[in-house]
Image 1 (cartoon, helix red, strand yellow):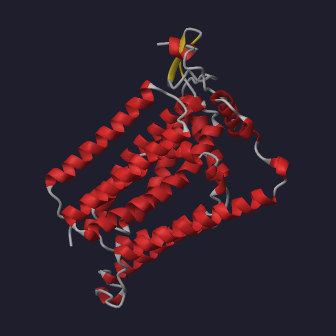
Image 2 (cartoon, helix red, strand yellow):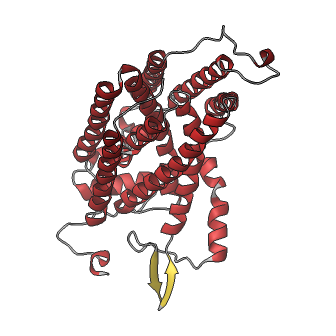
Image 3 (cartoon, one colour):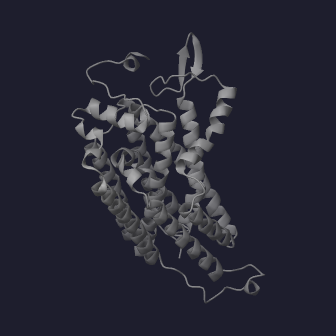
Length: 373
């Protein structure tokens, strides 16, 4: 059964989502700042509510099956995007990006991710249309990715360090200043135009987005083959990601079992893809090129249940383990940042912990960046 939506709904949805992303970007450019917990929470709730409203509209215009595919795809991409945040945190720390300008970096990362995923979605849809056996490859790839996710050979820190070849390549080919100049990628040092370290950060973020797109697109094609659902699910998963980055904060470090939940989801979708490939098999050397009728088709609602339960179990187990450790720790071992009483002190405490320079300034005071064009 193919998705049959009114053309005005498809075009209108993409136009509205594009306008929301553009407005979000303009807000960042107009007022770079460190979002408060309340502000981040409101934005995340807004985007989640928007996704649920869209799912309801899908139910009205296309039926429950496609609405379920959207929700399952959105949750899968959202969980993978949270995993992406771990690497973003390391990149920010590795390159000492001022916290005041991390929103711009995150937004650029989201835009790059949307472009890359859009290209991957178009390519994936075209390949699936022509070659049904590609589901065997997608499924095997996701099972292998799940194993790598659950039992990594290294850590996120090592992965971030491996990306230093980009830094070396850029430093050999272009002039890069030693200091940031706000969120600018170009600056003037001693009368000479140079790139700022921000260009290196954007390059590292772009490579990260590419690697995650390679993992995420086959995963969602295991849930739905509709390019429209795949693309909108990715947009909603990426919307609000920068606010989630600031909202979760140190909580990211406590989600120690999240990668197991993600690995289970990827393995489940990988098996689902292989079973689907068997069900529609056309390869002559498998079952004589005939469909394998006994291969079960896993329903959208079962997939949705597995995704929700996997993420819930991983999150609850992570927080429970973290709570046990905090209770077992000496009373005086609490973080020093709990004594921070002002935004500046809080920013300094977080910056010291994350290894980035504090950049919260008095809003009434004009800093050097504010006076520069």
